[in-house]
Length: 227
Image 1 (cartoon, one colour):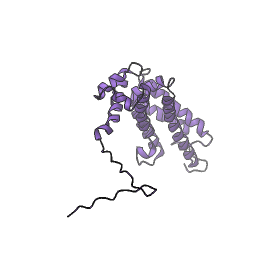
Image 2 (image 1 turned 135 degrees about the horizontal axis):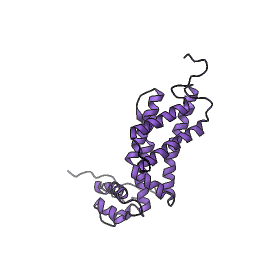
Image 3 (image 1 turned 90 degrees about the vertical axis):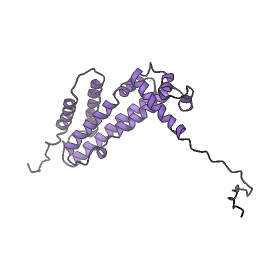
Image 4 (image 1 turned 30 degrees about the vertical axis):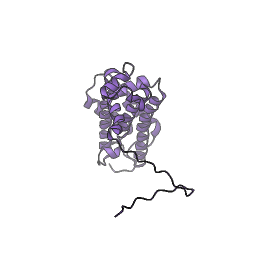
């Protein structure tokens, strides 16, 4: 019994179109960019940006020397790919990802603790970002993305707490949120780069205390509220 073959597709003009062969998936090839990024992270964290060599990255990834250039054209480009993962992790620290605790003081404390842990895990790369950003517009934008995310989240929180009568109503939400987030960033980076020797838990407690006192969170009572 003859087998029934699949119909040959037709082109828009009615003529017979040449079938396009399907490309078989190559799982090893799909994993190559991930291997290169993981290897680049190891090399950048070990050697720094300016001392890192592309040959060291391919050696670490255990791929041929020319393989990297199929995906990345320069050291700056693959560093940007590594930093993209860092940006995703740090900006992924949102109230919804912290916990289900509805108490604003507890959520603030936990969010700051999770953020500090996230930048500690990426301490070396965050330090390199500050070095590279002056010469690399893409990396500068990535750093700005982290700051903009944290500041935007803080502004929204201050406005929400003001509307709920939980913090001082006369604070400028934008200026206050920016001052507090810059404080956290500078203190954390001084700690991570070794310019200051802080105990992590004491530092987080101090950061939270400054936030709470500056905003009146947990202590402010709207006029007319029962004490």
